Image (cartoon, rainbow, N blue to C red):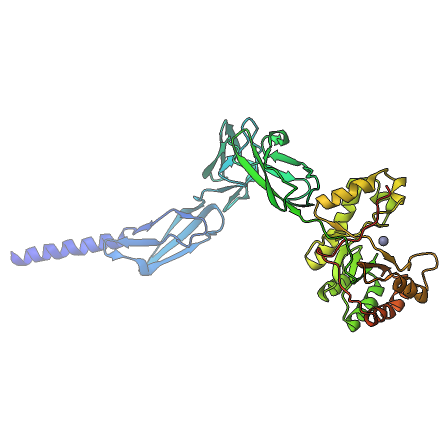
Length: 457
Ligand code: ZN
């Protein structure tokens, strides 16, 4: 009886195992979708009632994880005499949202009452690339919504807020510069100003200026200019007006050699002579450049003459004159980093040629340049090296030494443009004469007593 029971159990187990071995195994895949570019490939498993059949599985696939699509996985399970096959479909999918980026800020400030001008945007997608053209812009009053969808349906949106506020302060520009120098007892002339605002435009008429200049007292005075735009942004700016003591007009017996119209190659030769004699001089230049740099570094005074030296242009109007002066000032500034305030008018302040182009312009310019802080110099000894018979070093020498006096400020006019080699030839003898006769040589400075002609126009 006991044996029979055991036998039945054995029969049962054997049948079960036989059935199990005959039945098709279960072949399963763990996922049927993977993300684009991910290396997370699906894995296939097989088992039957004995347990896992992993070691009998052979799997093949054609998955390209860099391309969206439908791919096949073919699996085979081979054991005993069996050969089971099963195929699966796997999708490579894009689940990444596209990216929108805005030019400008997420909060954009716009003048009240003005339209927002689109600053631009771009959209890109990990799979589709540039999809800027697909962006949908939805504008509602002060909110702009930018949205885009990629080919897989992934969606992104971003917002820009428009704030209708003027946050920028207006700008005041002073004509004639922020620093003005005038001589005591001269009249202070307000040169004017302009004011502009990013939203309101020209608001010059809203500028309020306060402050006074007492030209009877030496000192620095401040004029304040203030303007407020329609959104209450305020700007204020100052102009310093310095009232100076009028320079002394009597002589000091010093020789101030001055060279006009350079620099040129001749300037180098003149600088050599000045260096050897240890003399400082003054160059009224037409531009900057290496010779100007050398002269400046050697301690000579760089002063401004004219950029064009074209009388018909320079004296046609005050604005032409200052444009020309500004040109030479800029050129010098680019060379030595300073803007000289000592100047000489083309033809001198006494020139009459300017009458041909603008009656009375010299009378106005002598005040204008002074109000702008310039000190102009003429000369009282003409070497006549630019005159009709001037190209003779002996005559140049005599013209100069005959004009010298211990009782005056000796400002000698010479030229260092390239055609004046005879001036360089006369120079050493002029210096020797001066040294032998008790003169000293100096470069003109702001403190040098001015030497000026009478104005004839
Ligand atoms: Zn000149």
